[in-house]
Image (cartoon, rainbow, N blue to C red):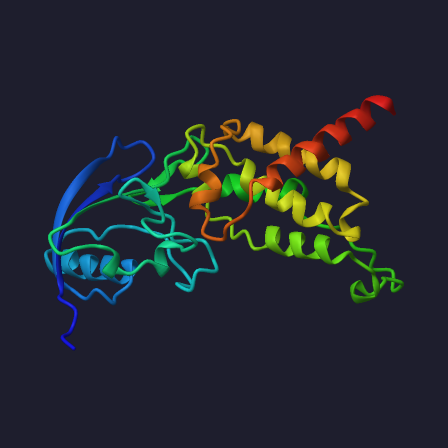
Length: 257
C-alpha cells in the first residue's frame, strides 16, 4: 500500500497587528505537508518557515490540542473549525484537503470577539457571562449534602451532561449570521437548570447571564441552526428553547412578586 501523497498548499491567512489595524489577507505557500498532520501542525510548519525567512509568525490560539480546551478558534474556508463535524481545529487533519488546494484562514468574526492579533480574538465576553451566573453557590458550613445522595432523573442527568460538554470555543457565535451567543449561554444555563443544585439561584442566573450577553454586543438568535451544526461538541439548540422558558418564567415571577 503506497504512502499518502504529501500536500502542496496555498494559504490565504488573515494578518492583523492589533485591534486598531485594518488587517488584510496574506498569501503563503507550504509544501510537503503530510496528510496525517493536524491543521495546527501545518500552521506550526508555516510559522517555522516564516521565522526562517525573517517574517513574523502567524499568531493563533492553541493549548491542549486534544479537542477539550476550545482555544483553537479558526474560520477555515468559511466554516468554524473547518470541514468535518464534531471536531475542533486541532482535531482537523490535512487529509481533508487536496494537493494544490487554496485554504482561507480567518479569525472569528463578531463584534463581541475583537481581534487581538492575526487569528487570535478576545473572548473575555464569555468569561463575563459565566461570572454573571454560571456557577452554584455552595453551603460550606459543614452540613453540605453529598451530591451523589441527591436523586436526579436519568433523562435530566443526561441532558445536563450534554449541555456541560460545551467548551466555550465560540464556534456558535462565529457561525451565526447575527453573531449570537445563545447556544453557549443556553448550554451553561441548562447545565444547572436541569439539576437540583442549580435551582436555588435559577431565576437570577438566567436573567443575569442574558443581561450580560446583551451588554457584550452579541446578536439575537437567528433560528437557522448553524450554531448546532458547527458546534464541535454537538450542543443541541433545544437548550436555547429551555433557556427561553427559564427566562420567561423568571421574568413573570419577578413581576408577580
